[in-house]
Length: 152
Image (cartoon, rainbow, N blue to C red; front, top):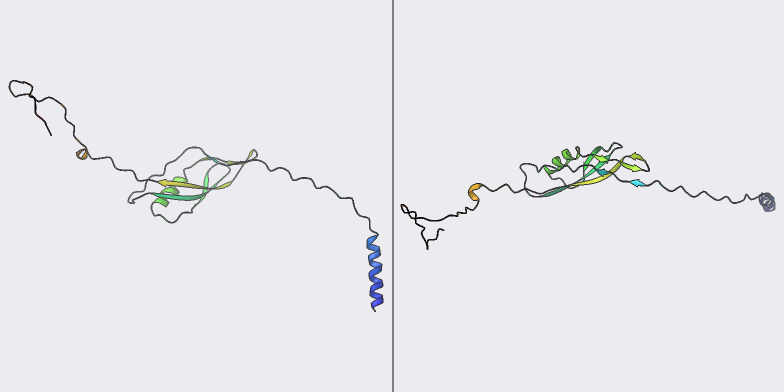
């Protein structure tokens, strides 16, 4: 039985070695990828500071910019910050971009965009402002200038 198996293998090996080997073919180098241009913000839109909150905050969003440059699929990536998150999401919907491009055709792109909120100090009340006086003191009746008098 061993002789038969060895003879069979020998016959099969002889037939396999008689096969012609094809010439090696060079693979074509992969085409260079088309250049990518990221989306560009057309106009800065400031996010309004939310009423009823205090302090500063940074809200990081994920935006999908479509082929027309409009944002969609808005997701907050930063930890929850009530008031600030809602203001950032509402403002992000108003953003407009030049769309991202692959070569000369527009393509959808996913980006991250951050809004920074800094509290604005209210204007001072008139009664809190310093008062500066300037003038000359005169004697009543004669209108003669009085010297050596200091007003505090």
